[in-house]
Image (tube, rainbow, N blue to C red; front, side):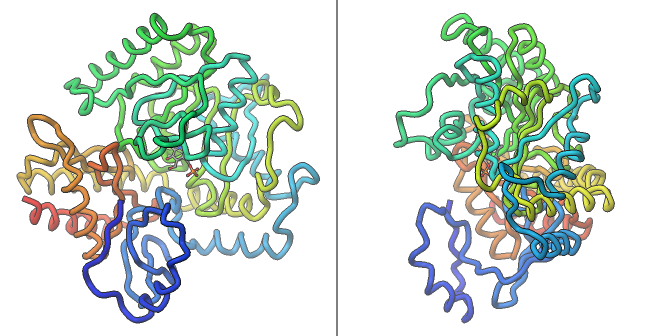
Length: 444
Ligand code: PLP
């Protein structure tokens, strides 16, 4: 989705924008801001205009922009060694991260089979790793994913993605052996409650196994604990436990895609913790290194061992500077109590947005939902639930005019995401809520 500003761009911005013609148009750009610097929740343009960044670069800058401790760790490591390739040598930040991250895996530690870690660069690359691992470990060909899910844009991950036809249309033929069932989204399934939506999803899985594939051909369920690009849908807390039980019954692996929900975003370190359902493979990226390209999967070491040496990897995975940034990110999350902050300020954000929605009396605000600092507002016609992406576009556009950066989501772009960094403050939350309330009033 593109939102262009009506106001004429200031001078420095105009000069720089003259250079943009070579930028591939595939980047569906949301603004024409040219950024000079970022600090905390704020981005500053080269003309000195400040914007409250409640996109967090699509859920990446959980520690805020350019946190001094992250910057220092990056600078120190870059001065020592930038690239110390994983197939050739070990490096200190990598070894430390391999010891530290597995302690955060959302399940009680099992000394007989501890958690291990494989590092890559992007979310999509980590999903590729998880699916390849599941296939090679189980020697089964099929992956079951959920409608509305987003797992990346590589040739493999787009086949697992169904958040929008834009991600996969015109790229056929895609990877085979993928089946989809509905995500338990009460609003879009018209189910009335999250429990009823969950029943529909579980019934669809039963039907899948009765009509299209045998469960013992399924390598993995691939699931987002909270639907991200597909609309920030928080499922019933029974969802992951129900999938876990079905997976156990049939020897299927459970892959939790925590690319968008991890690193404190939802008020828990990983969103899987909300239901205490242990994934077999946990996929992470985005918030892991405060903006440096790093991603990874965690799994029991006995499972990770199914990747025989040399059967998977990459030149840059586990880059030394990115690992140093990840270690500093973990320190900041811990030292500044960012998970508690996400839960506390998430409650403030959601209640503020709900109050703004109800006082606007706009019948097209179908839902305000979220968990922690992962919030969304969905626009739809009251009776038919026909998506109103025109209203979400207007909210994005009008918030941008008021120097607040937000993002759309949902299959039709009918929802607006509010994704503050976890270092945000009460005052910033209140400022964002009052900006959105102002726009709500103008929408009605
Ligand atoms: N999985 C989820 C849940 C995501 O939200 C994303 C990106 O938005 C990805 C995977 C892909 O990550 P990347 O863009 O780093 O490849």
